[in-house]
Length: 70
Image (cartoon, rainbow, N blue to C red; front, side, top):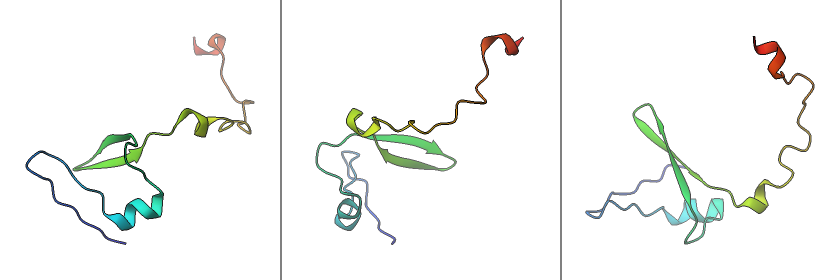
């Protein structure tokens, strides 16, 4: 889906309704702007509750410790 928006004179952009609904974005939600080449990646900042258990199945077997850095 291709959607466009226009930057206003107050440097604001409205996210198209179809995109907001598809991603369940709500008013007041915080977003991060990540520079990527000549563009910018806009991603929602997750709430703390959404991060609980995110690394529960992470493989820590290959984690280096400080002794092998020298």
